[in-house]
Length: 109
Image 1 (cartoon, helix red, strand yellow):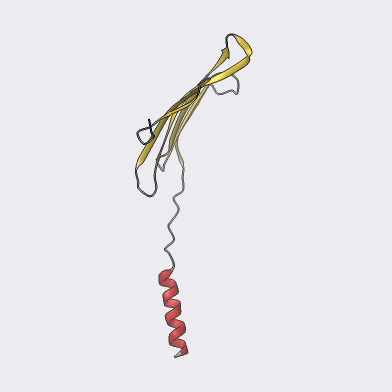
Image 2: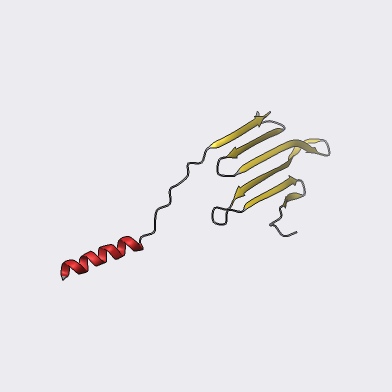
């Protein structure tokens, strides 16, 4: 009888354990870097095999011609696929002296 209880308990535990999901190895499918030397304008983009992608470019500007008060005007986008719902999302944005301005169908206006 003890053996039956132990066996039943082991079967119950093994059935209750969640199945382990196999992790997908994320790899870079495409990558581009242009004029990115660490000073001045830059741009880059990449795409991963899981649906993620990023594009960004920036131009260095100076406030009213004052070189010591320089800032970047950045524009770009990123997209990803929600692993639970399998829905794609994309956000485009700009960032400048007035802040960060994201736009996307799923974001409030």
